[in-house]
Image 1: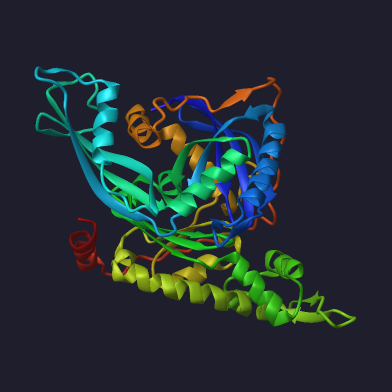
Image 2: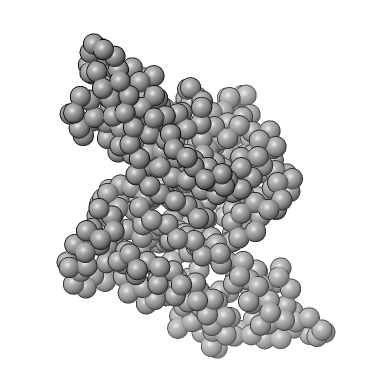
Length: 439
């Protein structure tokens, strides 16, 4: 595992594009600079206009470069889980007629053997994650290098996505003058970064409430096992507010950020605020509770659809419950609403870095953290996917040893209380879940 390095995480979201430059020293993440710009060219989490998206990426990167006093070349970019396919794969290579030490190239070769398959023309490999290596029948090996053997095998998980999504993302990054050195399925990076060891091991649902879409991912046994994406998110809430209150989208977004509650029972009917209504010369007073009812209605619609998908796999019986992240997770009362909708324990994940204490920064931070925690074997295996023989250790070049500027304060960072309750009897459900789905 890398103990030091400087990396750049690029989160291309529907609402905003975030770039985080961070130094990974002895397992500790030190943020050096942040870029946060409004997105363009995206719809429901997918790039639909490469030119506009690349220009927005350039603006975010430029801001991060100025803050960190560095020049950015290589980035770790997140890929959405839209129509993600996860499947187990295995490969085997002969080391030679006589036993010899296994090398880096042997690891690359066995990884390449594992991904030799007839992929449909519309799909592309994003990540290959090794589970174990087997040397001459001895299994459970994490790093086979320097061991002696005549046959090397690897079992792992292959993650593929629609070629359109993967290509457009990488193309927009390249058009912005950057090298997408490493692409990572977003929930994989988030699961490793924001879930505790126990949550990753025993099973947890990671619910990313983004601007353009909502992603429910199941992490179990330290692996991403399932992902479901609903193409609705914070932008849909904004549009609902705009339509119901007959106000502009810009005003609707401000109302959501400044006065919005996810749980209408926590909003006050007595507190009101003025709203500029189209066609009226004077503002109209709207109650806090009425606004919350608009927000709550859309959220419950999203949750109902995801609940049906998660219930079909018994994911809601996992002991880790639900962990919330994404910009919409900053809405007050969100944990109470999710707890009521899914009937599981809930907590909100908020980064603890100064200036980034808002759930919308989780993804960009997770990308940097994921790269910092990748072992040498992980990098060798991934290089078989990318064709890059050696993923660089350092992804940015420092221009001047100037101190980092203070980090920007995110918009309306509000504390969301997390209340949990003891899970109900789940023993039988967990056993069934393990036998029916993951195993």
